[in-house]
Image (cartoon, rainbow, N blue to C red):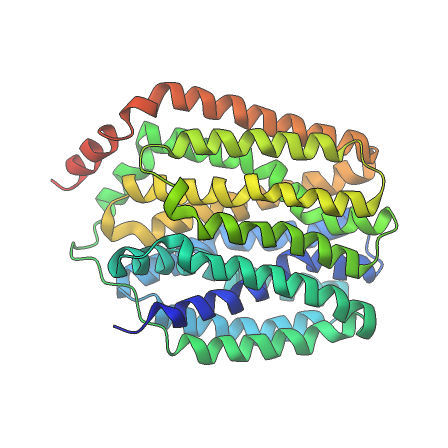
Length: 393
């Protein structure tokens, strides 16, 4: 089996591309002179594409029992579309290319995470030791893009995206594929999993927590520009946010334990609330950028715990699809709501009210996570095992 070192490099490169797309597409669109509602429309419309694109590619991967070959196709298409997106200024072309990049690039996220998790299990290493390099790539590219935009303008983003995409495609050839599941793929088991009460409650929690997070992610750069921050400060803000994730992922072998997932999700939800509540009172762009270090207690803990919880309850042969469902809620469905509602909210209220509202949404996620913890906390070690045993029959 090939060394997971190649997978670590691929994580670095792929998440570098995600940084250019997720963090800086709103900034690029803002620099084109588009209003927040139009930015929300473009990103939200792209989110609709992911509703069917991510499950489609996840099921193709499960059916063909390969992740690497699907990733090769997706990264090839993403490189071409990404270059064209950042070389475009027409509103119609921006909508079209954003939709296509959601179809190809965003669909890679759940497949990459599934490959990370399964490779970690097969090689006996921690998931965090692989995913750390994704956080590092996101952080480094966030900082780099900020300075590229400062010194070369938005025109520098297209060639940069193309270069990273080509290198990612080459590295993907050297990555070992995920071990194929020994059990046959059965749609009946997937249906049982998706309609189980615990699964549904868990997915509702993911959605409630994801909406305020995605609103902040989408409009943070735009808000920093409105406060007077330049592109380099936006890059620094995302560098601090993603950089803090490195430590969390690297130490996941120490803090992540089976049976503690819901408690960790509640912990992350609490700090989402604290982070957004504090943001409501900050008017200095530099201070708001520095506040992004609180990411260390939010996204990496929340998402890692959610992945592990999902992998303990989903049927083995449907792991890629299960991961897709999780990513679809966190980045797809919630992204649509965040883009449309967030754009309207951003233009309708003051910055303080804007952040107080999303802080309130995070507080709702905290309360719901505590409810689920009280219901399923004691059952996490045994209940999910019994659930999967029933699906195996």
